Structure formats: C-alpha cells, structure tokens
Length: 173
Image (tube, rainbow, N blue to C red; front, side):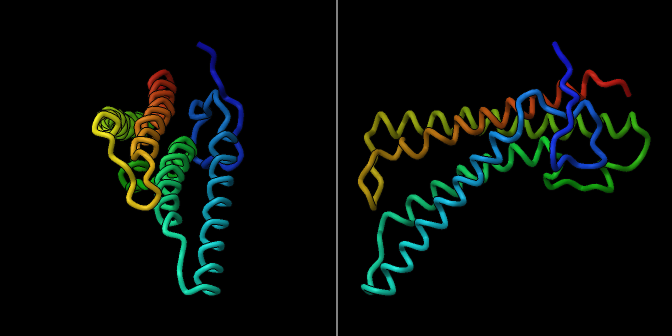
C-alpha cells in the first residue's frame, strides 16, 4: 500500500502525516457546498411563495430533511478525517504518544463499528420500504429513494474511518 502523506487544506494542526487520506477531501467539500446551495434555494423559494400566496410548497420540507441527512453524513466524513469531530480532548490529546495512539485507535474503531451497523440496518430498512412500496407523504415518491442514501453514505463514511484506522495502526508509536 502506498502512503498518502500529502497535506490537506484545513487539516488539524496537531494531526500527524499518517492521517492524510489518499482520496482527496475536495469530493466531500464540493458535495457539501452544492447541498447547502440547494437547501438555500429551496428554502428561499418556499419563503417567497409563502409570503406572496399564504401557502407553501409541501415538498420543500421533505426534500430539505433528506438533504440535511445527506449533508450531515457527508460533512461528518470530512470532519473525521480532518480531526474536527466531537471528542473529549482531555482524554484524546493527553498523555504519551503511545497512549494517544491507542485512544485514537479505540475511538476510530468504535465509530467505525457504529457506522457499519448503521449501514447494515438502514440498508435493511431501505429494502423493506422497497418491498412494501411505502411512499412519501408530500410528493408520493417511493421512500426508498430517500432512505437508500443512508446506507450508501454510511458505507462511504465507514471506508474513510477504516482508512484512518489503518493509517493510525501502521504508524509507529
């Protein structure tokens, strides 16, 4: 395996070179920008319509919730790799390098297990929705169109976490 120790913009200053991913983070960055733009446009359109007509687009809430879930998982992937995720720094950054490495491996491992579980369970949910033919309340489209993205994005986040865990494991304490 090749080592990817190139610098990433916005990388946490305390992160070590082994934490640089091989797949550039610009993918997640651009997806986040596009999703935020769509959210802003949808919300703005709904506000204008509601102001002018005293009614609103019913579909905007449904689409906005879907986009917020996608944005959360997408940005979460980027935050983990950049070491900007929520953690208890007193525990994570204290002590000797060997202890910090073990704590990082444990934290990444537990998070990885969570997102693998989320991918499996949400995949089963999406398959159930497909099988039962559930439709969304506002637009009437199949709900699996929305829910299929949860296992897909959970899997991509899991792959990012697996890469982090492997790079940390291979690093010398």
